[in-house]
Amino acid sequence: MDAFTAGILQRIETTRSDRDHARRLGDEYTAEVEQSALDDLHRLAAEHGVKVSAA
Picture 1 (cartoon, helix red, strand yellow):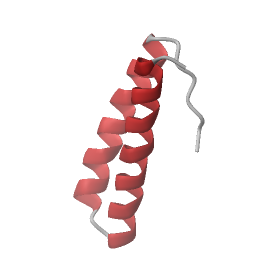
Picture 2 (cartoon, helix red, strand yellow):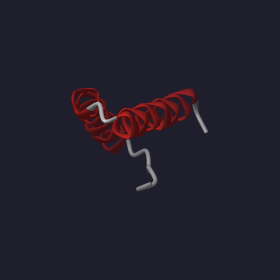
Picture 3 (cartoon, one colour):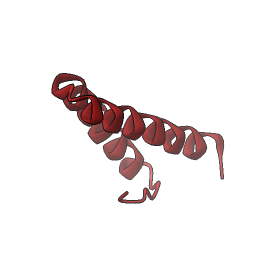
């Protein structure tokens, strides 16, 4: 796995975790901000052929 792939997958994992944490706290604004960032990361990954699990 190259550095780009490892980095984007780590950023996706971190952002997903942050989003889920915000949801657990009931912080819908932060959850939506994190979801937007997650959508962007998924788009970037797809553009570069990086496969991301759906979890």
